[in-house]
Length: 331
Image (cartoon, rainbow, N blue to C red; front, side):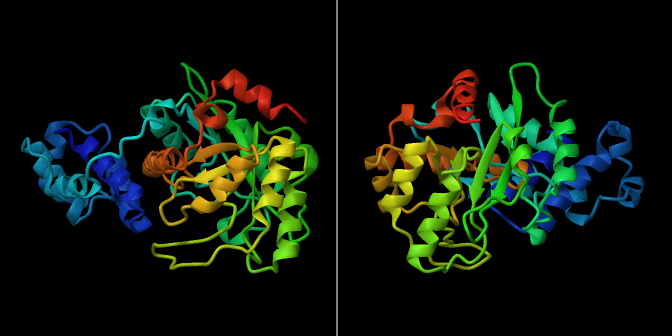
């Protein structure tokens, strides 16, 4: 098989299983290092080993691919990935409203995220890097976000649209961590709480209700902030009056995110049931921090289907024109 494609697929599968970011970045670096090389150059073992970005593991992959075999490393990853989850909802998803690039805490450039979204058949993807207060995630200042908008504007075409956006941090009082006028210029605003997740039930409920009442908010991201597995350990969900929060979402037309990351599974099943009962809209999002994680939508679709969420109440099943009508409802 093609060595470059083998290296890129390995990186994608490592990203999907949320492996070490250093592993996936190493294979992407190797793919970049051999891009455009002829078979003759690739077969020059000594020259290849001297090339920056090609290590022992990637060298072995290249050699196996050149020999006409599926590299053992790739075969093992494919086996671990297993059979794709089948969901009647998954083919109905047209896009994804929550993703990150290396501009904040994502692993790759915007163009690689766009390429991966196109390969999955997405009609649209919202780029929602973090806001300033989240310094640990290299959150975007107003100046950096404006600069990013110029880049985003060049990334659409041929049936695909990259939507401008942000995952804006919800402040302790329910305010939003970005200039209001700038939020109004964006296509998508996902509002999420990232700090003080153990606030008492009353203040935390008021905090989220205040946030979703803001005219700029489109999606309430990972509602409880819980972690149920993974390398970061576990974290209990925030304690909230879910009915009050979701009633506010329904009243303001804000979609409740079904976060597709397996380590989050947020909101919990019982909260999805409350949101359904309150008449909420939903957004099945990957919260991808790397190209391979965009396919995590499989998990979100599976959860939504099991919870009985109707497809028409999932905004990411909507065509772009309808999605834009919804986002412009209060702006």
